[in-house]
Each structure stands twice: as structure tokens, then as C-alpha cells.
Length: 196
Image 1: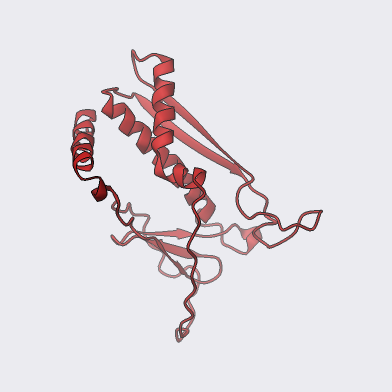
Image 2: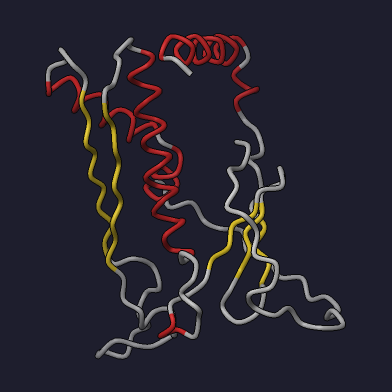
């Protein structure tokens, strides 16, 4: 889709939301993760797309698929890239290049429920998260591109969920077990793209 098309679509949405702000509140598409045996899990989108995750061999997995943590970083990176593209399109800036790289550092002890030297539980989440944006647009000053990137990051929902530290409403439903448990490696789905 061309930059003009994106800008026009965003303007239409903005106009609707300015007239009817309540229409901006909506349920997001649910992600359902189904255990497939071992450490393999299939994440499904309501539109039918499925993605496999697995753990590396040192954690008992096959290492054949990316980890759930990688999808977390990919979500941060792609959501931020999309938001930056929205800001650029809204201002009529034609980007020539834009890449967002997210890296993190984690302590595996948290995943295993281990304690630190002081006896406190190690947090299972990343110890640190870094994001690097590479951006280029012919004829646009560097300071302006930096502003567009920062504004896009500031509007991006996935990083916003982290910055806002929203609590997760956690519940458990115990059900009757199926006749036979799943086996890892069966019916791997294609890596399809989901609808938004």
C-alpha cells in the first residue's frame, strides 16, 4: 500500500474516532496457545493462522522453532515499526528504509523458579530490553526522522503495554483430560500471516 493510501486510511479512522471516541475501545484478537507435547506449543489466531514455538535443546525442546520470547521481541519490534510508519505517512514523509531491532537479556533461573544468592526469587522476565531503530528518508533531516521514530514508539501499543505495566487477569479452568496426550512434532502448521 502506498504512503498516500496509508495516510488516507489513517485520516478516515481519525475522523471516525474524533466524532465517536467510544468506538476506539474494542476487543483485540485473542491468541490461543495449545500445548503439542514436550515444549512445543502452537499459537493460533482466530483467522486461522498458526505458529509453532519450541524451546532449545538445553531446556528439553527440539530447537526447531523460535521461542515464545522471540515472538515477544518480534511483537515489540513489528508494532513499533508499524507505528513509526503511521507517523511518517501521516506527515507525508516517504521512508526509504526503516528497521526496528529488539534485543533482550534474560536470567534463565527465573524460568526454573530458582532463587538468587540472597534467597529472593529471580524474576522470569527479561533483565533488560533494548530497541534500535534504523531509518532513512531522502531529503528529511536526521532530527526530524528521530522525532518521527520517537513519536511512533510513544504511540505503539505493544511497548505501551510494557511501559504501563498493566496487570494480567489470570484464571485457570480445570477440564477433563483428552483420551491421548499430544505428541511433539505432529502436524506442524505453516508459518502463515494472520489478519490484524
